Length: 141
Ligand code: FES
Image (cartoon, rainbow, N blue to C red; front, side):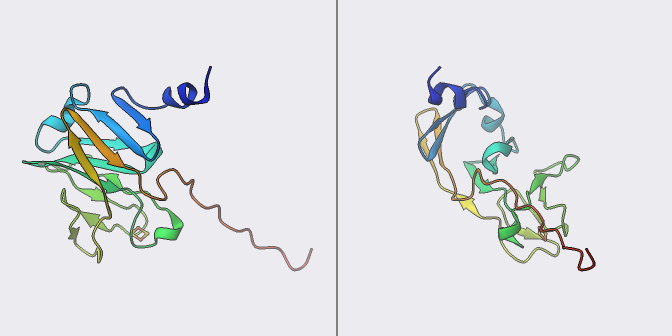
């Protein structure tokens, strides 16, 4: 099996990777056709949100402490899409605007609509794993 084909199996249906971009087939990912529809691509740290006129893509890495790579998640019980970082509860609306105590916008990823395919440019840290905490060495050992 070629390497490209192996990595393709991990992607959700209707999503393909082409270099530094994801191609999302809107005929398959129909949640992005309805206002308020959300597609979370956890492997790429992306949140896609459908508003009235367009689909926005946000980096799901919290802008509060971006080097720590805390992941922003959708608030499940909210009637309209809301996103929250679990670390310090910063919250954003469906346009990535800060709500409550959040002080920065949710970073955007570039998108382009080509027919029925949404092309999303992957952010720099899209696939980076979270950093591991350094263990403190015991001075008495
Ligand atoms: S690291 Fe996300 S809210 Fe503080």
